[in-house]
View 1 (cartoon, one colour):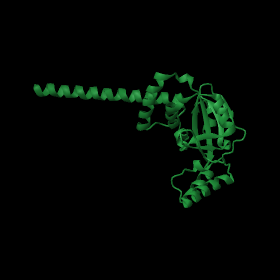
View 2 (tube, rainbow, N blue to C red):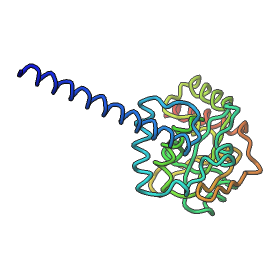
View 3 (spheres, rainbow, N blue to C red):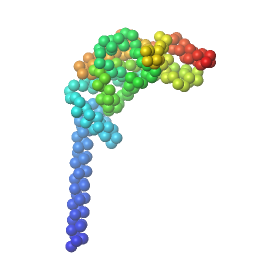
View 4 (cartoon, rainbow, N blue to C red):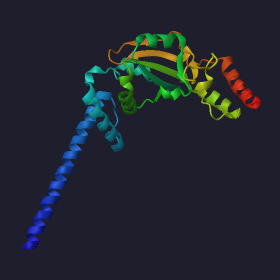
Length: 235
């Protein structure tokens, strides 16, 4: 009798576990369906991607409404992500439109490391969504920076050939000499030709830069490498 009761209990527990598993699958399918509707992702999400999205969705729901964000509107998304895939694209967030306009005309100023404030992005919509949710509260305006793969490869190779390992190619792409700011940080100015424009992710407004040229090069770039190399020889 005891064995029969134990068997019944085991069967009931197994049935309950199967029920919970089915509910979990249904919940994940629902969340994935929402993910596709929000971001336009057409492929099935992998388990780790789904987990990331769920975590971001919790934070996203707490802070704002889905309808406030125009990042995945066709016009905005296509401006940010180039389908040709022949460029490195980075995003920088700012609160002030005047700052965005200044970057368009003057270039992008950064200290020491370009990647402190410039976020690299790919054409993966889920990756873009997660990175955007982490950075969007720095401002409504997204500066889109785009540098051709050929420029990146060429100057990265030039640095390597010169034996310069503690500089990134972004530090070389400046026509103005780097200067020290009030905090004794080295400040660089990426030319305005690499600024594609900016978008307002809340309104969907897109502003293009008329001088945008992702393949822009300058004799000053090679001079920067020579300057660094010469300085090290002298020191």
